[in-house]
Length: 257
Image (cartoon, rainbow, N blue to C red; front, side):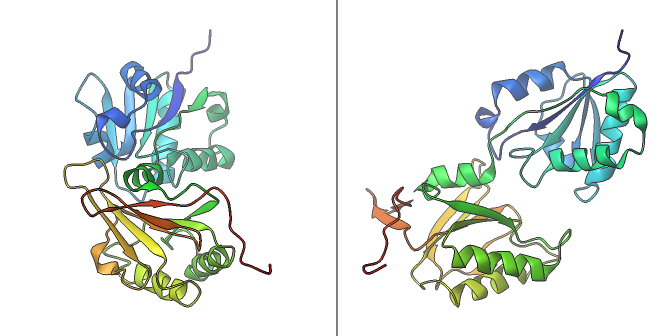
């Protein structure tokens, strides 16, 4: 009989309980231990779980703890917000596994459950901005050089992707979204639609549709998902004076190209 427990990596979605998938709800109900960033664990109703909360910059330590608990026979849920595979704990877990610090970790049954990502929730709020090719970037330079961030941003703009930006700004990085927008302004039309989607699905949700020229980085924070349109992204007036934002599935080539 296998003495090991199990480890399942889950995402809670970006907002309300209704965005928690049934699969993840079942995992949480059957877990003995929850491991994750403290505010994410606070979103899970109190129950018989053992909770192991930690700070948001100790992902590898958190993954190692979850593996150790599973080796000891516990049924562990490693908790992320959004989708666990998008700038979240699934990657940290596999990085820990690859390190091979404890050979017993390789024997732990591991599963990753998909979740609703912040970019999908934000896109749904305004229409269908991700209807054609898009890319996803994190503006955080905690784990990669800022030069790499800018290079990828420029190449994404050159390729005319819709761009979803995670981690746009923080107290430690108050300037980076402004620098990213300034870079994009040298490459894209000033009228390019931009969506600032803050705390989507929460009581303090705030979604703003603006343009690249008018976008104010001071209105964003770490809970904001930024969507920047391509040359094809359109605004469609809707009842009440708001607009839908969508990107057609067909890419319209300019005449003569």
